[in-house]
Structures are given as structure tokens and as C-alpha cells.
Amino acid sequence: MLSWIDFGKVSAERDDLLSSYFFDNGVLQSVVSSPSSFLVLGRKGAGKTAVFRYLTENTKQFIGVDDILVPLSFEDYNWNIHSLLTNENKAESMLYKQSWRFMILVEALKAYKTWFEKERKTVPKRIALATKLLEKLFDSPVPSIYQIVGRKLLSLSALKLPSGGLDLEDGGIDSISVGAGEISFDAVRADKDLRQHLSENIENLINHLDRALSEADATWPRVFVCFDRVDEAWDEVSYEASRKVIAGLVSASDAINSQFKGKLRPIVFLREDIFDVLSINDANKLREDCGALLNWNKKSLTSLILRRVNYFGKLHQQAQIVDLDSMFDKQAMRQGAKPSSYLLRRTMMRPRDLISLFSRTVETMREKANDPFAEDNIEFDKLECEAIYSAEPGYSEWLKQELLDEWKVQRPVIINLFHAIQNNGSTNFTQEKLSDGLQKLIGEISLADMLTHLRFLFDNSVIGFKLGASTEWRFKCFYPSQGFLESDEYRVHEGLVRALNLKEARERNEA
Image (tube, rainbow, N blue to C red; front, side):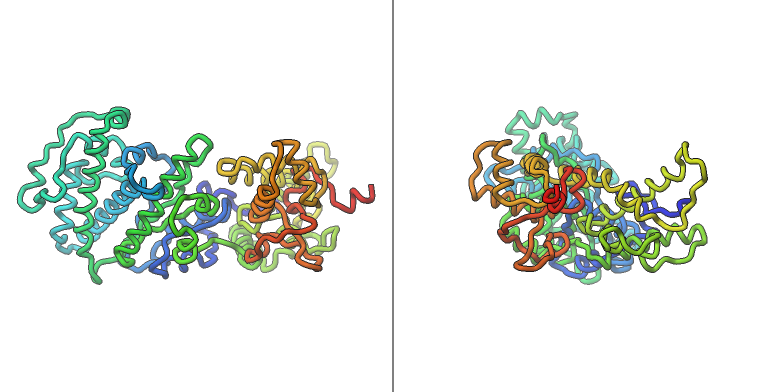
């Protein structure tokens, strides 16, 4: 079995085979079919980049034959430029709205001009003139947005474009002189007049592009401008600036989506934890009315894993596997649970978690098969349940680090929360125990703050609690609609027990 079994890469951006075994849980169709939707939200590891990539590579599976998709992934991008286009008199969520709006309109304009030319149709006059203006300012053909939002954009700070008097139709474009020479980012940042000119010129350009695109009618295709990896600058150093920049993107997307009635559709793929800390008016309303949440259940996660396993199995002439448990050498683990249930309980119901744990289990078996001190060759017809136990410590450390990476920027207290739980030493603890442990690390803590910490841990499935007199522990990842309730006792997620070196409650009692 070890000669062929594989589960693909944990990271979608590094998986060249993603389109071969991608499993769609319905989120793409949900957001595309709803004219008001423009947000795809999901936790770190939920598969947002995988969905973005699949949409990019299989566009016509989700949008109309004539519709246009413009995918923008911000792996290497000059975020600093946005800081020059702020309006200090506006609310935080509106600070960077102008620069993002400009980007979306430029991409839509380029897409429409290309479509008309490809279809051998006459390019509408306003679209042609607006394109000509951009070519005059930024080069011909109009470069990518990554190139525009850089030094090319800075050149606008030396121009004075009239707000309403620029005559695009009667030679006004040709009269524009753009020979201002090289202008540096630092020069614009240090000069208030240059920043003012730059902001005014972008505002004027937005007005011209708006008027050109407002001619779109039912015969024109829809344009979807999709944004992924906008959290690339999300770190301790850039947190405050990134929070404002991303809030501006959400605000701009919301405004454009409403203005163009679904004809121009920005779609933003964004981590749920980042959305939660953005300063945006009516954030809850946007989440409910304009967002699609990328979440998973047992059935969809099982289907995802089987899709991957059977892809590699088919390449090696293996029979199709229809049940995860049939891959294992035993039908029950030590506690009596099926292998698939045991594995799922150690995940947070995210594809990345399950792929990681399966892959580590197989790697453990490969190490056993290649043991240089083994006397006999070892071959496996099935996956070993014992290998899951061996893979758990490394997986648990990985899961802990995933949570730290997810939250250490916006909620650095998570580090101390993990330390307090670890110092307690048991999988189960009371509010008082955690409070005492946390106070030793950070000092006095109020009851309100303690409840905030517990709610945060529960919302991210680090801990769960019993519901009433039931014997079932409730974790958010397994029961998404479950809200936080104060409890006499809390329990740490199974996937974190090894990394935090915790003992089961009954083991401590026996000891």
C-alpha cells in the first residue's frame, strides 16, 4: 500500500495536482449564484486558496460561458502604496476604499475591452476612451494592477487632472503631459501637496472609469474580480496597517457590488478570524447577507479524502475505496472508536488537519518499513491503526502551531492561554484553575476578561464543554451552531493534548 497511497499536499498553493482531485463542498456555487455575495470566509486551513485556485482553473464550471474571471492573488505586492491614498477625514473602514475601488475598476475596464476585441465587436466609445486615458498615464497596453500600484501610480502625484473638465472626446487625453520623471514613494509620503494631487487624480480617474462602466447592459458579460491571499502582510509588524487596508477592500467590494447590481462582482477570499477584527460598519450584516462560510462536515471531509486517495489509487490500478475505515487493519481503535472517527476527533474539521494527520500516519509506516535495523522486510496491505498513535505527537505540535499562526497577531494572549492550560497538566479544567494559571503569567485578571478568554478558546475549538447532563463534549468545530455557555468544567481538544503534554482526567485521578 505504501508504494502508491498519497493524500496530496497540505498547502493548496503548492499542490500542482489540486484540480485533479478537488472536492467542491458547494461554497463556490453559493457565492456565485447570489448577486449580493462577495465574501468567502473560512478559518485558516479551511481551503480558501484551494477554492480560489479551482475557480481560476475551472472557471466555466461556475460562471457563464461569456462571463469573465479576473483572479488576483497577492503573494508579492506593494501594500505601502495604499497608505498614500488615504482620506484622513473618513472612517477607518473607508481609509483605503479609494485605492481598492480604483484597482477593481481598472481590471474590469481591461477585461471588457479585451472581450469586445476578442468577440470582434465595436468597443463602446467610453470604454475605448477610458482605456486610452489609462494607456496615456500608465503605458500601452495597460499593465497589470501589480505594476500600476507601484511607481507608475506615483507619477500621478505630479499631474493635475481636472476633476470635471477633462474632455476625453476632443483631444483632452492627448493634451495631458506625463513627463514628470521618476518620483519615489518616500518623496510622495513626505510631501502633503503630492499626496493631495495623487488622491485627487485617482478620484477623478475613478469618476471617468465609473461613467465608462456604467454603460454595461444585459448584452455585456459579468466580470468577477477575485481576491486571494490579501492577508500576506498579516504579521505583528504590519497588523494595524493591514487591518485598515483589508477593511478598505471589503468596503470597496461591497460598494461596487451594490452599484453595478451584479454586473461587476468583486469576490474576496478572506480568513474568518481576520474579518472578525476589521473595523467595518454593519460587519455582522455583511457576514450574514454577503458572505459564504467555507465549513466542512464529516460527509464532505470524507469525500475529500476519498477523492484524493482514489486519484492516486487509479494511477496504480488499485480498486476504488468507498469507505475510509476499510483502509485500516483494524475496525476499532483502543477506545472502541472507528479509525475514521478517531482521526476526525483530532481535527478541527478542516481539510488541512485531516490531510496532515493521514499523511503523517503513512510517513510513520514508511519509516517503520525502512527501519535499517529490522531483520525482515515489512509490507502493508492496509494502514496501521497503531501508526496513528505514533503520528499523533508530531501532528499535535503542528496543530498547535497552526492555531498560534492564526491568532498570535490579533490575539497574542493565546500564547499565555496555552501556557496556562499546559501548566494545569490535565485535559479537563475549571474556570478557576485556568484563571489561577493565567494570573501567574500575566497578573491580575477580571472575571469579564476571563470569560472573554474562555469564549475565544471555545470559538476556536481549543476547548469544549458538556451540554447540560449529557456525556457529549461540545466543541465548536463539531457543532458549529453551538454558542458558548459557562460550564463547571472545560476540556481541551483531542488534537492538542499531546502538544500540551496533558493527562486524561481519569489518569490523574488514578495516579
